[in-house]
Image (cartoon, rainbow, N blue to C red; front, side, top):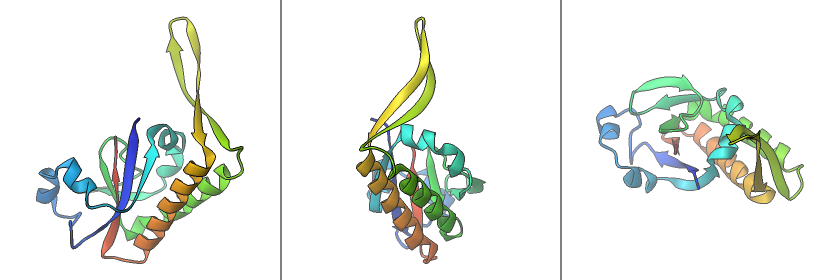
Amino acid sequence: MLLHHFGIVSTKRKDCRDKAAWRKADYNEVKALLQQSVALHDDLLQYISDSLRWIRCFNPCLQTEHSGLNLYDVTVIENSGASNAAQVFTAWASLFALSPSELRLTGSFVTNGESKDYEELRFNRDEVVSGLQRLADACATVSNNENQYLLHLGI
């Protein structure tokens, strides 16, 4: 299962603007820093990816600002982008809360031999809504604190 991990990190524990520290960072070491950790499936993030481009982010390895999550590497959301992120994740949580208990979404177009069709993604609605709302809450916390950031660990 391809999961993206998110969590709050204190700048005192790991400064996202310290390029040298990020170049030698180990995945498990960084993952252990996450507070209020949330994991979301890659298919779900792919589904909402257009709206993720509205979030101001930072790449700690390249020391560059950009819009949207880097789905295949680390992404930092500092307090300057956290308010938008909280709104985006809250909006998706509210929308998905309206679905039946089995949340069914249209995924990527796939070919399998002669068969060509869109994937049908299936999720437990309550797990998705809870994860998105916890993520929105973490973003709201970061938006009010310059000594924290939200760290995303891509697949």
